[in-house]
Length: 430
Picture (cartoon, rainbow, N blue to C red):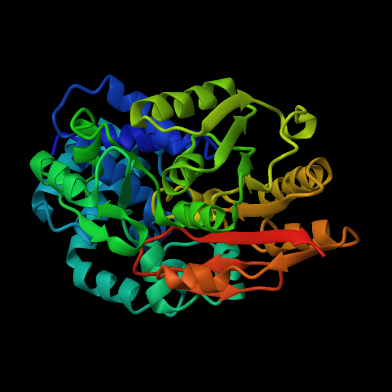
């Protein structure tokens, strides 16, 4: 269990700035981490952040001095230890407690030991209390602002909240011009990647993200794209005619899937970030995709020469609240201020593209379920501009997505496809 103390160090650093990107923070730490338990460390860090609201509640039950906050290092150690005691069956209880106490500073050892020993005496009762809690925010460790958004789209049931509280899975796609499904299945089998085939979408699902990254050389013909993001590309493939502008394309999943599904369509993929666009260019070369042209462009200063586009895709930057499974740090860091700031920018972006491409259709998407970033954006852009929504729910449902229809688009809800939660709207001139 050598990972317990390093995991606590990562979490302590994250606690100092909650707006930092947890994934980047952990990646930088792992780059210099020489032990062979990186997988356990990663799962523990993400697990603690996923369950942090519940962990803080449980620790509070056994802290005698409620007015004095624990020292940051001791608090981080307690969160890791309590997470392992409550939510993991992989490590003996005595070993978890001993490891945490040994890792604590000398003056904090009695405090850490007292809290954990007291928790051990009440462990079954605490587990039952969390499992049977009538407070979904505590039971599923999710902030009220997110619960409110889920309630508004009808995804507040036990099954939906449990879905968002699980570890993520990952989806692998491939270029069908390089291999067929049987060949793809064989490559994954040889690489030892356990997976489930999602035949309607033409992709594979795996929970073994670590193995995928470790064996990237064997899987160079594949790319990762969540099924929620694939839904946007599936719609684009069904609605595009000859040319598509993907205006915030990087890292490029939608452009690549569209090129795979519709090699007859010209895809113009742009992004304001040259660095992020280079990643897309590398993937296009690696996958030997044709029909994708890339260039740097600002949505608000979009260059001429793309007027022939009949479909414009805007997967707008957002809070990514729909990606809670792979970004559990969002469970507690989002605020109404951040959401409204994003919504203002999204409205400006969509309105700018409506003006810039007056004869196209506009496919607006966000991996968010907050109303301000989804229906709220489209409703304000549509007003006074002579636009109307195109029905998209029937097509998405035909692929197996679970959909909640709204006035101007629809939400992708938790489903057997293990998709992130998305909002998607297709608009056209009346």
